[in-house]
Each structure stands twice: as C-alpha cells, then as structure tokens.
Length: 98
Image (cartoon, helix red, strand yellow):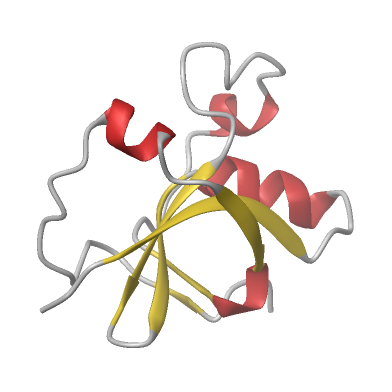
C-alpha cells in the first residue's frame, strides 16, 4: 500500500492559501503511508514529465485536518517517490482548523 487511503475530493474546509502563502510554509518530510489522496486519478504526463515542477512548487501541498494528512497537490510527486522506492515525500503542511 502506497497511501493510507485513496480519496476523491477535499473533505476539509477551504484554507484560502494562494501560491505565495504556500511558499511561506517550510517543507518537511511526510511518510507516504500517512497520506490520504484528494484525487483518485493522475494524468500520466504529469508523472512522466521531467519538467513537471517548472511552473509549480517543488514541494507537495498537504493539509492536516482532523488528525489526517490530505495530499492536496503533488500526487505525481508522491507516486514518483514510490516508484523510486522512497517512502517519504518532502511537502509543505498546513493545519486547517474546523
């Protein structure tokens, strides 16, 4: 099992963060098996593209809500890490309160 659970959608309330606010959150390591995905499909091009982070953040975006870590952005990074036999991912984690 790569992820804790595969979800389809964001169960948490909106956090209102834009790209600049995400960039201010320091990255940390997160175990892949602790993540719940918010997408159940992936565009294969995003996974295979070597320049997939050219216009985006280098780190995945994770939301901590009700004790669970939700992978909001960066599914392709997480799967690439798993394919490379890594069990951790560098991600920016934001806590969302109820």
